[in-house]
Length: 191
Length: 286
Image (cartoon, rainbow over all chains, first blue to last red; front, side):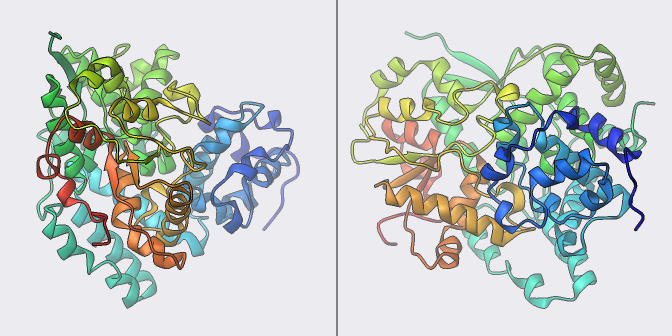
């Protein structure tokens, strides 16, 4: 992988998506200190921001930590320089998924988020059972893990007993408009 | 007599899915307080974490469509009981308020004119509107035996520039509501720590670890129940409570109530009316 010195195209795009000036960060570490999943991260938030300041978006876009982030917004809330770190995480996830650089170890999370959006695109509202089936199916095709495929199977009767299971989910009346919104967003704008 | 309150209502997907016990609870509770809910006609999903993680435009457009539909229906206040939804609605509204070009672009995208407003309310704010004095006066069964740990999680209070509600580090508004009902909320350390949110399916271990820590801290501070105002928090802390205990080699038996359950119980509503009988953890070692 070629390392670029200075700024590269991804950095302005990340700043624009997150509405954040990365240069503002003075590396105090508050974001990482408050992060509930930092203990499991390969590159914690403070260092991700530093990599971007140094122009190394490649490492950041391959980091598994961007998929371990739970979007709790603690980093953004506590930043003394108003760097919207959680929005930078979003921007990194968006670019990593568009460029196919998402860490293989975190592929399940990417598959889940994509299955969720696909579900909304088709129905306008979330159909939980269909999402679970689509997500589990896609993961199984990838890693052939039977334990993962069936790990929540015991939950179905538990949910059924509590009248929390909807075999047929809701759809909105105007599904056309939802599909058109998705199509326009995929092109990155209106028209 | 208090005038009846009519609020716009954006239930969100969870409340029409496996978190339908939350909708049952708040409809029963708010109904008893003469609050009527006008659901946004043909509302769509807010996009949640998946949209803001993968497609920034979609994360503005999906909530914006709902704001536009609410305006079309003449709703000036919209109650969104899911903090994920309410944060997304607020964030989209603010982004467009400060950027007329974006508003124009998004209006085209969602085929509905987006205007300023409506005002978006979370569940605690609805009780504040009703008035804590009025709640106090309506209590028929004081909750004096309950020592709840009030759990806010993330998006009721964060990010503060978006949700502008209570104190992001040490919120007290939920404690004020349950205290008005006669309960004795405990002081504890994890009220704004994350439960793992929407990672329940994709990264189960993360949820078990984070939710387990929250449950353990509540127990350590003498709580005999948890109170939440979020469907995802309820899933992770109630449905996943047994697994979270196993993950941490602990055993939990802590009922998790929605804030509307607490108010409903104090008003004299039964567990079946509020949907509490449909929770996973019933307490008392069952």
